[in-house]
Amino acid sequence: MSRFLHTADWQIGRLFQTLHADNAVPLAEARLSVVERLAALATEHRVDAVLVAGDVFDAQTVSERTVRRLFNAMAGYAGPWLLLPGNHDAALAESVWTRAERLGVVSPNVHLLLAPEVRLFPAAGFAVLPAPLTQRHTFADTTQWFDTAETPAGLLRIGLAHGSVQGLLAEDIDAPNPIAPDRPDTARLDYLAMGDWHGCKIVSPRLAYSGTPEPDRFRSAEAGQALLVELAAPGAQPVITPLAVGQFRWDSWPVALQVASDLDALLARLDALGPRDVVDLRVSGQADLAALQRLQAALARAEARARHLQADLTDLRLLPTDEDLAALQADGYLGEVLAELRDTLGTPGLDEAARQTAQDALALLAAELLDRPTPADLQEGH
Image (tube, rainbow, N blue to C red; front, side, top):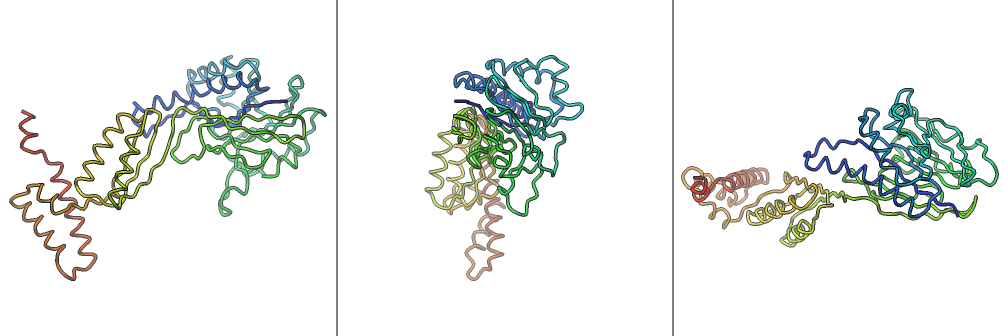
């Protein structure tokens, strides 16, 4: 029985520049620590090799320190690491790979698959057919040469590629770095390890995307895994087992508030967030002042517990009740404006455009009044 650990899209050195540094730094560090967990898994399952199907680095320009730290993180597994260049770290004439070689950090058990040529591992019973990218994008299938590549009899034929398996995207999308979906059949592969998609997807019995081992975006289904691939013999169908390795959970929450129970459900979800959660929340619908205050309080609590929470309330309409407006205690000119807007909304036969304008104005004014410091607040400030 031969075993392989299939992983891809580490994108070491990625910077989460849109996030606050308090959150960006731990998320970047997680991309290195997950490599240590992959090494531990490879040792635990006694795999014959770790297959890394492209985008090991996020960019050619990562720092020397980052390069060194990556190869240090791999030290926990002494067997073969097979690293394939992807579109982020293509095998250019001068690349992050040539820098790593000059630095002398590439251990003898780490194999850089920089050329499309068969690599033999007879002692472990397999041959590798790599399809490294030598530029960021190509519209030719880099795996085509697999079909005519010869390997010794009795060795497993393992392919590594980075790109888009054709037929998985919408027909009108012309994806770069295309890969034929029947390549395992035409090239007599026992397994084709793919990279590029950040979500785990088993495309066919011999072809799969492992996804990124550490989630890094809000819409990546089944990210945070690696694949344990077991092969009994050449020609046998592989047994593919997903293994959870990710530290953080990224999720996108589109939430529409229409009735009171919608808000209750959202508050319960927010209160359940913990230090592993990275959430993009987008709230639409409508809420009165009391509901808005409850939501804002829950967001404040959740932001202190979650690793990262970003909340967009721009599509949430504030619809204050008569009780809300009375509680605002607006007097003078502001009180007159509030009264006028309420009277306008109560006008019989008011057309929808005028109603919407008055309702939006009322909501904006109520929100401003809600944020206005009270006399008690001012006294505490002294």
